[in-house]
Amino acid sequence: MKERVFPAEGMKSRTISTPLHKFGYVFLSRSVDNFRVLINTGNVTIIMKCSTKPAGRLGLKRLMGLLGGAAALFLTSAATAAPPERIVSLAPNLTEILYDLGVENRIAAVTDYCDYPPRAANKPKIGGFVNPSLEAIVSLRPDCVVMTEDGNPKVLDRRLRALGIRTHIFRARRIQDLPREIRAMGRILCVGTMAERQADRIETRIRRIADRSKTASQGNIQKGLFIFQPSPLIAAGRGTTVDDAFAILGIDNVAAAAPTRYPKFSLEEVIRLRPDALFFGKGRGMEERIKPLMERLATLEAVRAGRVFFIGDAVYRLGPRIAASLEEMAACLDAR
Image 1 (cartoon, rainbow, N blue to C red):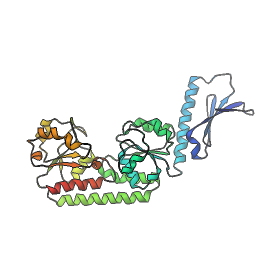
Image 2 (cartoon, rainbow, N blue to C red):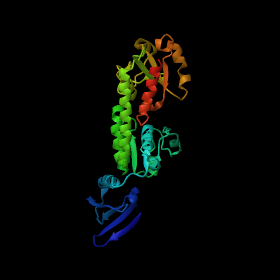
Image 3 (cartoon, one colour):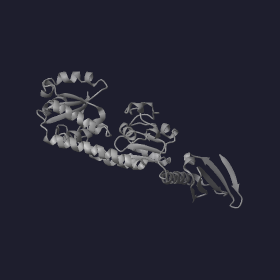
Image 4 (cartoon, rainbow, N blue to C red):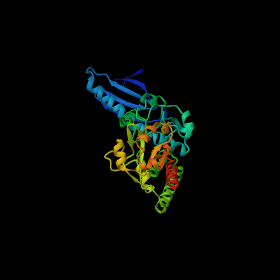
């Protein structure tokens, strides 16, 4: 910490290094009790009046509040001047969108669960989806952190912004929201033309699938159930991307009447609901994991008729592969 004296003002100043150095110049000066704060060219300068009266705990609290607020204000305005070059993604679907928008070289880190496209696994990791490491994120000196409204901890957004790190919240929860949020992300990343093209492509494919489903006969499959986890049995209820997928394909989601988005069901409830088809996520040993469940649901017509399907995880990753996932589900229906 450097200290120097301003004789004309009768003040001492202490300069504290901060992560502001890469954002250029700003001049901001305000007084708080016995302090004046100046943010200048990447340093925070605290000018302390030569006073016989100590600032006290209240003055220090006010100072720290001013520092956080001033830094956040400065960084928010400064960061918008140039496209982000060091992006941290806090969700697998956001990582997929970043790759789809052609900004792979600007991705500084991703979560442990960001495994698509496969080369995303080579990026530095900052922890899990619901528990990312703030320390790891900050150490990477990102100029933008992209995160979801539905999944990432909200307190993390507040902490990052308090540290002067820009965040972008991806607010899509439903399939119909996806194109809008891709366009919004494109504007933030300064790749608006690419985002517009990719969003248009997704909208066109989804519309074609929906139109085709309206005229196609679903045969024996009128009602479906998507099971995320066999034990305890957790399904996709209303307000989920799976629920949207069923609606686009013209299938009734038997779990839509449940009070929560991801309800737990007993075996008896599943049998009572009598779905015409069962859907499971593909991979992670799911085919082996559901064998005990299939034995206990052996009397269900869907199981007896072999209408048990395994779908890739893109259906519940709200990203650029969502249309391909809908086509995968439609192909299962066509085959039966």
